[in-house]
Image 1 (cartoon, helix red, strand yellow):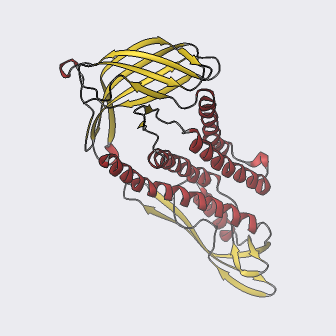
Image 2: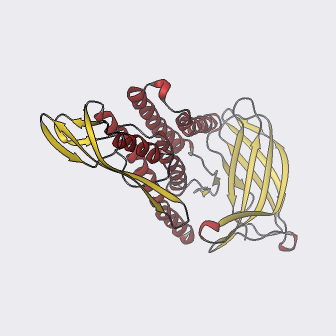
Length: 364
């Protein structure tokens, strides 16, 4: 119990920075859209470009990042101002060709001694920008971090905080894993869908529906996927409820015969498949080469029919003979990054939503 609590605390602390990166990237996208939308009300003013340079920086891994820098003057209400603000995006990067294309446009105007339009805030003329356009490729890059880092962090945090593993109840039965997983899935889906709808709506107002880059439409896929999975898990929960597992003995050892009875608090008619497996989980490598493996040491598959015991209950029984250590079995154990665990997966194909329940079993 202490090792599990320690592992949950470690995973929670480990995933908080990932969630922070997702929130940070999402806030950057939000602020970029807000700034561009605000600049739509600014006045167009001719600017005289005095200098324009495309800075190129070599990264530690050999790649190059770019940043366009410019100096220009402009006049508002007969007063002359100086500025070096090129766009709402600061710093250098190599996401797309924004800096190269912007440099070409600005430097062409400088060489041709032509005025280049800048956009000045009528309420504060010192607040100005040369290019007020959004960068769709940068938005896509930021949203990848939001969905990948944020999705991974939310999944792990939900698993650890809400404890979706099997738990032993006061009556000795074992509660199924992921019993209420539909709740965080639907909450995550609503948050993701709300953010995506807001972003698409803002873009439609700023650049029009037809001008939205095709690759940004892929941003709706994570939210729709979460919604679909969440609704399916909610339907399974509504149809079958939370199953419990009753074992023939509270203490199981290698070589024992085991009767496992699944108690389904709903009427569920059909053929059920039960797969009991002993799995070795271990981690190899470190850093980016770190990977977790799940090797099945032993497994057994049985079929059974459901037995209705009332208007709102179904019993499904399986009779397993646990292997000995020589036959590939291993007692439940967790040491550092190595873990041996037993899991019973019961499933049945049914009209509409299929039945599935997983239970963790302790074998001594």
